[in-house]
Image (cartoon, rainbow, N blue to C red; front, side, top):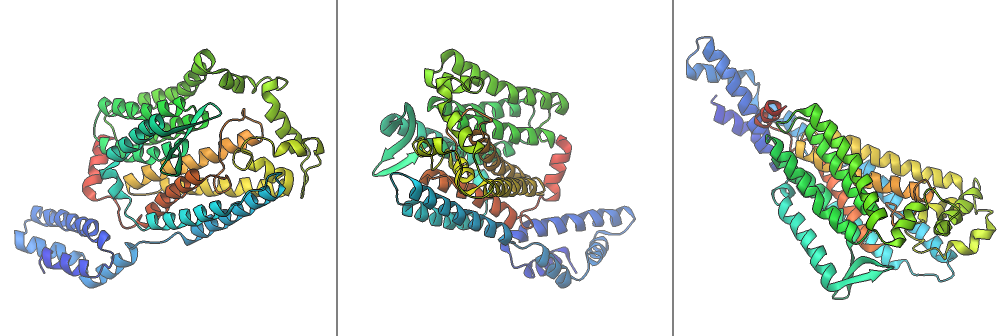
Length: 446
């Protein structure tokens, strides 16, 4: 049997069309390698190829086995957990509304959550690898759109350029910036095999979204952008994608990752507004007037019961007067009004889920999927950790959101887009694996 006939019969057994090209390419390389081995042993070209094909086994049985392996698979267990957390988040929002002096309807949040779940499932079924081909263009469109939109249609809230209001729709700027993180991962994927130029370009790509986050200003968004993108670049260097001294470059990256936040805080202290300087000072001076929110949160947390409402009656009336309590302080509300056990379970469930996402992404054989998945997972994990730190008063209170629980349309949709990308990467992990040629490229650059 000829090589072409064998490959055709194998491909006919594979039902997932996306899996056929990489699978056929992989088998073809194996046949060619074995053919070269027989040629070196003195066989002629025709018999060498025929023996190499025969060594691959029955084409129908081989194709059926490959079809079993290389097919999309859904992470139904993770999807179920996401749905449960989404429903619980809506329940918490309803309870907050009922406890508020000015109850609000959560129907908008219900609609956005359902839309987000549908968007997540739609992205899950899409081929995430197509995004990498247009990552730079998409990132440019998002950044320019947010910058120009903010200048022309921006809405100032408490001294911040928080949203773009256009044609009756409000688009929050901070969560939209988080979409640039997986696009950044997809972009540096194409820098493989380059040297120091790749590192320089990767650094330059980090700067624009961070500057935009600082200009809003949004401290938490800037911190997430810095940390997530540095983690992505660190993984790429650690994997040996670039022709650079790996150990020295990793040390430089760690130094930069530490230096960026320090430089950011120095910029705030030296040239920032009084509002943000006060936020930083409140971290060490809890007796200052700027620590008003922190003292309320500590009072609430200190009076939290194992189950049920807090005994901190002195802060009860002040609680819902805190700004954006349904978003920034939602975790404190869970501890104060539902109890320590519910709060602890909520934290544990979120951290375990996001670490699971991070671990699954790191295990991906497809390098693009690995990098994009870890970037999305790092965003969700960092958001959760920062929100926990704010609400437990470990860090000074700033703008922050808790995945699945915080109120907000734009943020909710962005979160489900990131979850959809992670689920898409998991779905196609056995379909879009690396080919032998690509593996040789990676090994040659390490």
